[in-house]
Image (cartoon, rainbow, N blue to C red; front, top):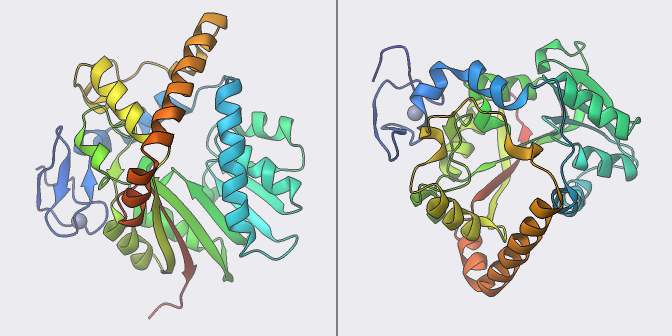
Length: 308
Ligand SMILES: [Zn+2]
């Protein structure tokens, strides 16, 4: 391992081969993509900072609205009416819009101008800050900061979490979600979270440590296993002929969400239906997987604690 690529969580220089050319820190167990770390901004820019914003299709919007409602239900339990919420990396803005509809004061921050424009044009009540967290007006703090599937894109997770910490009121909390590298699907090369723009891969222990080391105290940490976890991982393993996406040659290709048309929609309807059915049939296995912290979606709620 090169001298200049230390573990992004504990700064140890000791790492060993994980699988699919990823490295695992010998000290804290964080899994990271050493080559992607060296090309961080390039890969994330290629994937996310396009000036054009492609609207997701009906299926994706439906799933996003459903997930947004579930997330808003959970967050809402810990928030007073009218509380302020900052979402870092709002994606298509489904959660932010859902939170606005429930009367919260919602801000989003994203480096992509296209994302900021799209989110605010759909829901004008959302206040968008285009840039980095550190570019936001000093002193602007929130009752909750949400970062769902953002941490794994960041080269320096501790620095990122500390800048979130600076935006959370002392009485507030942060909600973080990442892919769980300790999910059994992560043994398949087609696991949906093996992506060229994912720089780090957390398990429950590493997420707990990252939050603790950046000034938070973990309130709760849990995993969930979505309907699509196994079917998608198996499908990608077959169709990509066993090649993990983060190793594939065409890394700079633009995101594939632009493909359109009725034929594509029909295919997607068939495969979403199949996925739902498979997910429903294997529900008991998914429940066990989630209960033992092996679900592929790993989340935590943490509160600021005073520096020791
Ligand atoms: Zn480490």
